[in-house]
Image (cartoon, rainbow, N blue to C red; front, side):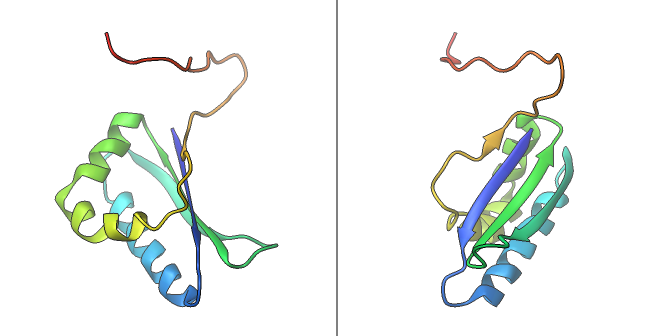
Length: 104
């Protein structure tokens, strides 16, 4: 699974960069983390992103629910632009997720 969180730097891009590096390090230490990076938009340098890849959605959710992440990461991640951020990889011949209720 892919996760993309976008941020506006505002008046202190150096502080945002440090915050995103902290969040990335916390997530990278979690089981199920595959890879990730912090990036800045080439056309709009105020727009930043934290992109991570996970073995599955459960690994990502467990990373978000860890004590250390709740304490040190969530306050920073909470400043992300409010938009959907979880994606499934689309590869040749894969069956894509179907939108619908998960309640059984």
